Amino acid sequence: MKREVQGPLLMLVGLTTLRISVGETYLRYVKEGLQPFLIFAGVVLVVLGLMAAFGKSEPTAADAHAEGHTHMDGHNHEGGPTIAWLLLLPVMAIFLIAHPALGAYAASRSGGGVARPAEEAFDPLPAGDPVEVKVTDYAARSIWGGEETLRDRRLKLTGFAVERPEGGWYVARMSMACCAADALPTRIEVRGDVETPAVGTWVELIGSWEAPEKTFTDDAVPVVRAETLTPIEQPRVAYE
Amino acid sequence: MSENEAGGAAAQLTEAPPQEPAGPLSRPGIGSLELFGVGIVLLAVGQRWISPLFNGLPALQTWATIFVSIIVQALPFLVFGVLLSASISAFVPPTVFAKILPKNKALAVPVAGISGVVLPGCECASVPVAGGLISRGVTPAAAFTFLLAAPAINPIVLVATAIAFPGRPDMVAARFVASLMAAMIMGWLWLALGKQGWLRPPRKPMAPEGHRWRAFREAAEHDFLHAGGFLVIGGITAATLNVVVPRAWLNAVAGNELLAILALAGLAVMLAICSEADAFVAASLTQFSLTARLAFLVVGPMVDVKLIALQAGTFVRAFAYRFAPTTFLVAVGSAVLVAKVVL
Image (tube, rainbow over the protein chains, first blue to last red):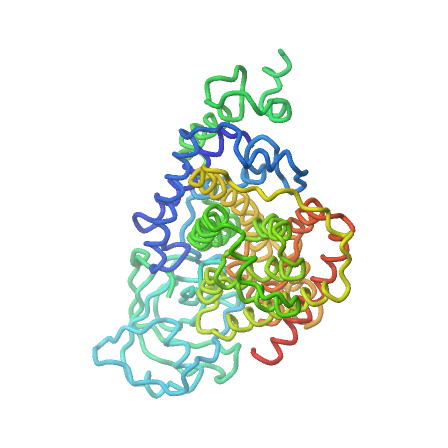
């Protein structure tokens, strides 16, 4: 990699980082808390890139190092590591593949069971009619012994529609532990007299709890009986 | 030189002499900078026409989201790590190491190992640093222990691991203990079995005379570009495993405990991801057990294709061929043992 390209490449990666982190695009990929660090990283990269592009580049200790022993790890002697060209790939992916947060496709592929939650007991839901409940929370309560807290309440769930192979549909959310790379779906089967939305549509569902086929196992599927369904815009933070 | 003008970047890359003045406009013909510029323009222009083409391909979009998310998540850690290790290589004289180590070689091993905590070093730097330490009189056993421990147990890596596996501090502890243990075992093994002849007498260490800030800047540039490239390979692999490889295959490998551990350990060797970032790739491999993923995290910073190449270049080939497989076995063994106890 030629010396001259290093600076622009660093700046490009930095600017791309800034572009997605100032604003909300980064929320498709990672958690909110990472924003300040992403911005910092972007700024550092842009500065490094500027210094590389406009700084002096007479042969330095680094060049003496390059001549001193053979590089067999993807280096070109005059300049930077050849492998760095790969950094263009995420830049291109961000610009060219305008992808939304992980949605219906990912949710229909993965396992989608409801994992046993860490806490044993479930607090009662706050007051409100209907009371807003997270999809993952509803699922955990349904399957792992918290159904008493769900009974006889009108509940509001927000999620996107996923096709159910046996007919009907699920309302689903993706949750990520660290970042979109490890996101797993939670799916709730929807029954009731509502129109089946198109796959991937975000909806606000108001309904009530219904008993699932089985409980206390990893592959149980929670059920909700829907009264009303309203299509909505994708929320700011798509992952739960 | 007409073939240069027609052949473009490829010909120029291998032929350009190092002492040509820098500056984008000084070289005639089509250079990589010009190509880069053209590429940027195409990107900006093409976005409008190319993007919609991908909308109908949810598999590709999902792949891309997973790929980008690994890169984005890892980026701040990589930048921090690179800044810190560049500062150390530029501003901390290697004599510091020689002073803090005990004279007793057997004791120097654990001390060198623990000192890896305070000295973040991307594995890219650890091999030249070890060579530099040896040339300054540090006993090789301690230098190797440091070489193996520093990339694996420094605070940035541990924080990254904590973030990648939220709610599982035992994973962080396990990584720390297993990596330190493996590093120390390798150091003691060298004391017992190592032969001086396997080390090429190391060159004078590359002391940045005078221009410390320039050395810092160039180390940071170089390390980030280098590590970034390998991170992209890791991201591509993880995203592909996630979207393209049939679930059934992954489940088959992941289901067999021994196979899972060996598969991920092998993957760690092939992918050569910088240790600040590998936790995020490991986190994405959700089908695999924590033990297998721990093996991935312990093996990666210690032995991978990039490190093997560096070791063969800095020391002697005979050294690399012994060091790498032994480190691999010790690292896997260490990970499995610690996983049984801690996880």
